[in-house]
Image (cartoon, rainbow, N blue to C red; front, side):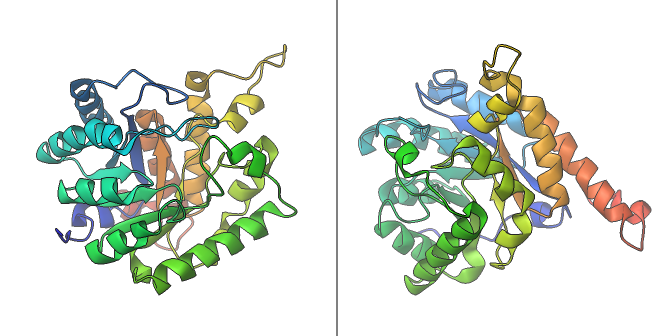
Length: 296
């Protein structure tokens, strides 16, 4: 299997939170299903996101929205592989968003540099072996079940402590399966088997998740809990595209808390937000903002 170089030095030297732009090559994703289903449209969208400030482009061929049905593996491969190849050829840093080992293997062979597994290796035991053999960045998200059952699994006594402990168990299992600790990025899984109110404590207490000692990825973009926060006088949640400014605010706060990456649909707002957070954080340090302005 192709062994990747570490993330490009241009990314690791930025001194700020990375921005991952979402390319859903699906007909049924919750916010933009069908818009980029054609491979050519998906590639153009990915390159547009790079032009808008995305450091990484996350390509996915299966909707993970609540209630979503599974996609046959051959169909997932057909959707994502041409897009991954074209974006890599165009110089983009590509992440593959999949829970399937065979898709992960094919995508990293095609040049993807990040493996983004919303199941954290729980959907398929073989995924840990692929990540271990490959050796690149592996994002393990907190997950309790696929989209068609996740809402029935959304029960917590103390969501922050339980998510931390379940992520710790995942981390231990991945390392036991041969994944190197330094490969792993953790994701609290906002909106995945988490009712609206449970997402805010996770964002407010990112420091508790940082106790696990691994970088964090936060994916709040256009999620239901933001729609409910922004509901109009009639109580109707804001539509997905009406949640982008709130997403950018979350990106700024998450970046100020020191997360490694934010995953978003609307890149421009969050690209600005992470730069504001970097300047803000730098100004609190003894050397002041002057030195920090050149970090990226």
